[in-house]
Length: 527
Image (cartoon, rainbow, N blue to C red; front, side):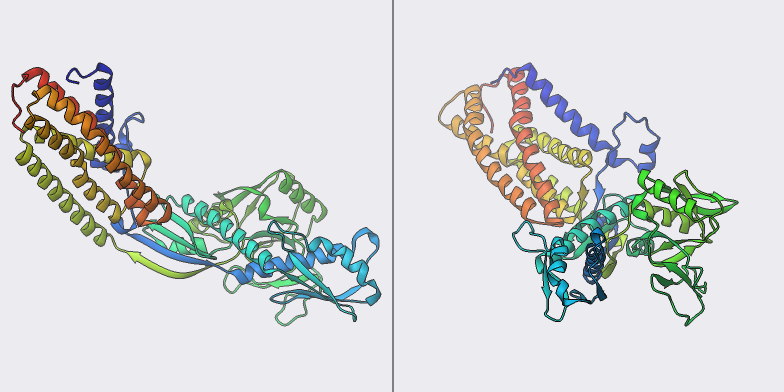
């Protein structure tokens, strides 16, 4: 035991060096770290919302819009199915309300043919339920009602997609370590530490950013009160006080086929340059080729950005959106288009701003608590175990370095509960040493020599140390799996502290005691 193996010395030295090297960047400013070479460790612990301030947003997906889009898709599918194979099934008044699609057969005798054509709308879902119920009355009245299971599945998919889009938009703004997670059936919790312009973030998250291209209906008047012909719709200008436009309902090219969008300049004015993927490029080329000389409306969230005239076919798959943007407006629009369109609007249910003063107070209180905890434990160990207590204090200091270094490498976000976990770990860090030293005392009392007492003390305390830390580790894992947000932060720091404290107690303390024993070879132990 007292001849510590060389490989163990190397392992302990490397782990301790790792702890010190990767902790040091936390004591240097970010600006200084950016000036250092890339090979120099520069990872720092990120401070959570409660420590550095920021914005807390609770968003809700507009489920009515989700269901409405679902019903609109069913209307389109119904129209296509009734017209398939050139053998049309006559109908009239095809529309939808808030819960169902309905229409009337021109000839009630076509009921069986219509039911067969519409059977694809009522498929069997994974849970065994039908996606929709189709009812055809004797008078030819037809209703198609989506099932609750189908609606729930569509809403769940919309929320998942919204979370991904929100994450992309937030990441594009450069916010460090945002927390974005689902809450309940249709809500999304967004926490943005250190956000300096929360209003801009709210605007970016509130925009649906559905980009489409439509032909302008030249046969219709856009004058207020003028009749809008079937197959077209009236859309306002995106600019306040701008004219209305009458555009065709048919989407010539969709933003879903957008590959990239960048803010740039054209003739000294900010514009957004967009590029389509292969399919979108072909659609855009075909649309511009077939409609040279006609105005082409660029529509964003049912508002016309601009309606330039197509002067020649555009076959490159690229285009430019201009509309009197300023630089920030062009950058934000490009960001929204790159991130993708939301499947439904998001409503802000709750907004809280956390000031940095609260975070500074919390950090200061956490530092004070940590310092008091470290000093109290260190003094107790020295007072109780003498020189062995000094060894335990060295292990305690390295334990703190290891916790900080692991959190830095992981890019973890430190919150108030996380600080609480670290402070708790400080007290637990010497627990294993206490068990070992008390066991060594017992061995000395029964008359064993110092060498044998130390060897037996470490060997017999090992099982107890493992049992104690495993049970605490299980509790930390349960907190991490079952908890959310701050509870997870507490669990992470607690679990890391358990691992590091076991290492420092079993490996580092033992190595220090072994070196001392080989050098001093004491006849008795004052413990």
